[in-house]
Amino acid sequence: MTDFGPISRRVAVAAVSAVACLALISHSAFAAGKKKRLLEKKPAEAFKELHFKKIKDYKIKLECVSVSRFLMAGDLPKITFSLTNIGKNDLVVYEWFEREPDNLRLYYHVWKKGMDVPPLKEFTPLIPPVEKKPKRMTLELKPKTSVLIDKFLTFVRVVDSKEPVTFIIFAELNLTSISARSGFFKVTVLPRGKK
Image (tube, rainbow, N blue to C red; front, side):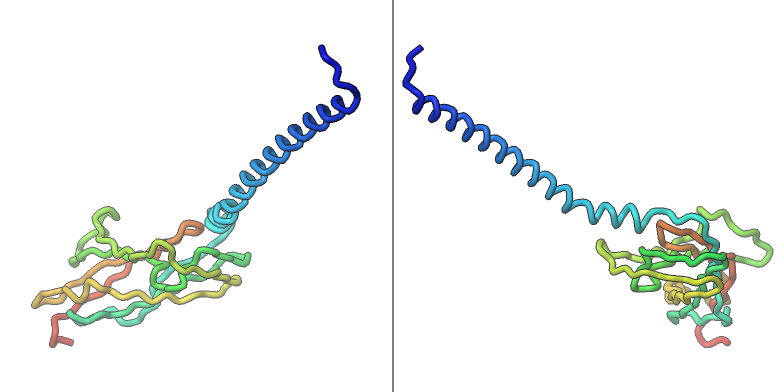
């Protein structure tokens, strides 16, 4: 092998070192880019996992608190529900919809005197048309405190009967982290012009 002297050997060593440094920089840049992409995904994943996961150790009650149970056909009546924290601990819900009616689903079925409560699968659902990226807020309920939720009974608009029609209804939360279902209650829709 030809020896070009000490100066040439130093140049060769420097060249090898430069190549090694370049490889290290390229690897670091790749790793940094990969880490950045992971970090960019993490907040959304964390929000989904931490905020929308099922809450444990809570006790709540959902009930209809509207007094009037006689409605007029063709109207768009509003009924009010109460969600109450009946547990001993504070309840914090991170997925609560800013548009409060979206937090409930309603189910209804025609009812006649003497009928048993129909199977749940036979009820007609009124599910809110939630947007792809709905605005949400944090709901905090101390023990023995409540939040009120108004819902419109849209099906009353299309009731067309010369006789009163009674419906049996129940509601449930339209959420992932907590669940609750109201008891059954009845409303009677009167023909237009009758009271």
